[in-house]
Image (tube, rainbow, N blue to C red; front, side, top):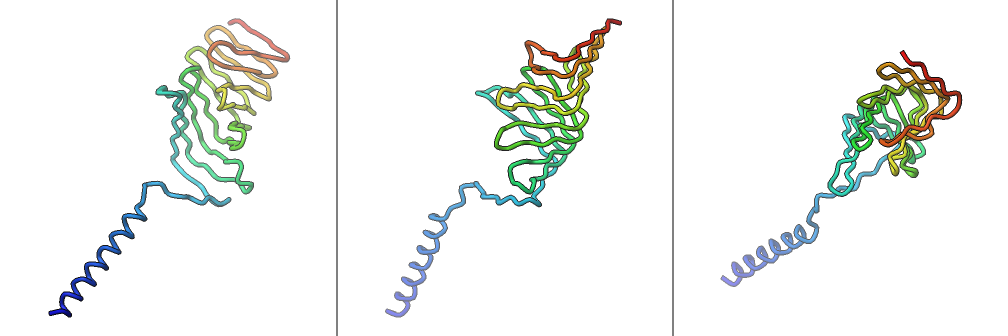
Length: 170
C-alpha cells in the first residue's frame, strides 16, 4: 500500500513538474525569424497606419533580402498613398531598410485622379511620404502634357518640377 501511495505521489509530482514546464515556457505567439540572403517572401501586403488612419498600402508580389541584409529587392509592386491620393506601380524596386526609403529604378507609373506620371528612378521617403524622381518625367492630364528633368517633391498639396520644364496644352 505504501508503495502504491509512493507511486501515485511520484506520478503526481511528475505531472506537476511537466505542467509547470509548459506554463513557464508558454508561447506568447511571437516567433523569432532569422533571415538570410536567400530569404524571400511572396504575396505581401503591408499597411501603414498613423494613429488610427491607414496612410498607405503596398501590395508586393515578391520580396528578396539582399546579401548585405540592409536592402530588400521588391518585384511587381503597387503602393497606394491615401492622403496624397497617389498610386505608384513598378516592376521592381529596392527598399533601403536603414533609411526607410524605397528606390524604384525601373519604369514607374504614378497616378492621381487627375494625372498620370511616367518616369524612372523614383525615391519614396516613407518617413515623410514624399516622392521625388532622379530622371526625366512626363505628366499627362486632361488637355495638358508636361515634361521636366525631374520632380523634386510630390505630395497632395504640390508638385515641384525642376530642370527643363515644358508644358503643352492640347
